[in-house]
Image 1 (cartoon, rainbow, N blue to C red):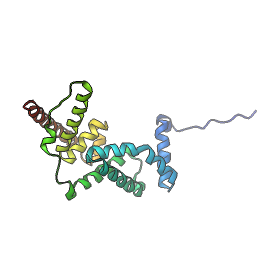
Image 2 (image 1 turned 30 degrees about the vertical axis):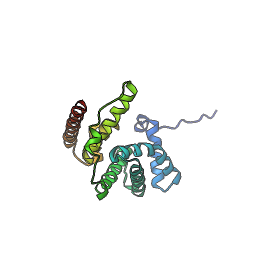
Image 3 (image 1 turned 30 degrees about the horizontal axis):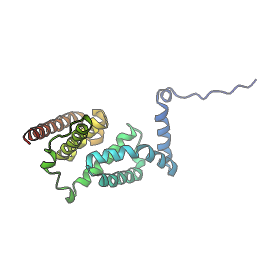
Length: 201
């Protein structure tokens, strides 16, 4: 009687989640020019890339443009991804670089006015207060410099570890910790000022 032999996978492959193996396969196919694999990667990461760009750019229309430019750069240079580290870390690095390039343009010189930040929190029910709080947080983020804002977004909203942020921002882990501390301190200072202003209204 002939029995089928089960495929023997290396121990490293067994330890790797199925999802990661599928992504690695799709990346390899995309590097070989497969449009279907490129579409797979685009579908998997588009929402995350647009969200990251929106948090850094603070303007939805420009965030879409930045996300598109980031994907163009990523797929054009896909062969430079060697599989060292996670794909999304490599991709986020490109997204952040594109966003910061956009922010250096002359049309980004003016940030949101201080009046928009110091509008008081209003509304009697929790829902309105939640909306007001979210708007205040977004306004405060607009007052922080784009590089520090990117650090906060990567850590607090995207949940990246310090090492991953270091790879994305291309800085040592020690500097990541210092910049995050500076970004949080700046945010807290702006928040305290906004709350004080709202109390005086």
